[in-house]
Length: 242
Image (cartoon, rainbow, N blue to C red):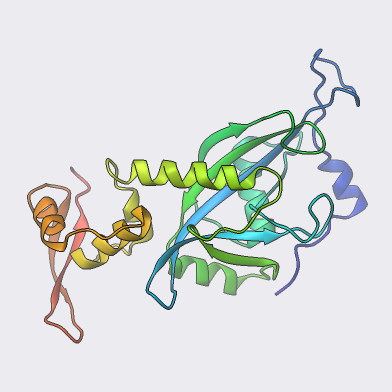
């Protein structure tokens, strides 16, 4: 385990943020910096059960030294946005969700001490993948997971960004298969309902939930069952043809 490595002098020069003048010329007085940040959601164990959480990074430099912030960093002048999102996320958290989706661009004039535009990405990552990725690499220590309903004050406008991403996720879960990104390939209906409950932040009626899904072509029942203290529960998978 380690703190995020400080780049060498040569690397800092190579990764120096692009300065864009509003007139189209390079300049210090009207410079615009471009940063990339990422919001990662995962289900993590908590005393009250699995909770929807996101990782935050404690800043090691000014401004906001010691404050929590979303993972991110500066855009290299020679890399595209998707590559920058993957790189900065790996450097700050050791996480690699495989697929990142661009969420929104935040560019209020007063959002940072210097004029900065942030391109924000988001992704969902299964909890077992989180554990495997962080244990398999020299993961930074200044990373902690926080419940989405108990996020502390963050640096810059990152509270607003986190809230925007959570609203987007909660709206999207009702009309997409986004919950599948938080589940194993096969799952019980109870496990699927618990994912929806964690994302939405409220309880769902088990009978209505089962009836709604069993009446659709979204899920395919398998011949496998999950055994435990209660009667065996059938496992389902998402219908790739639906």
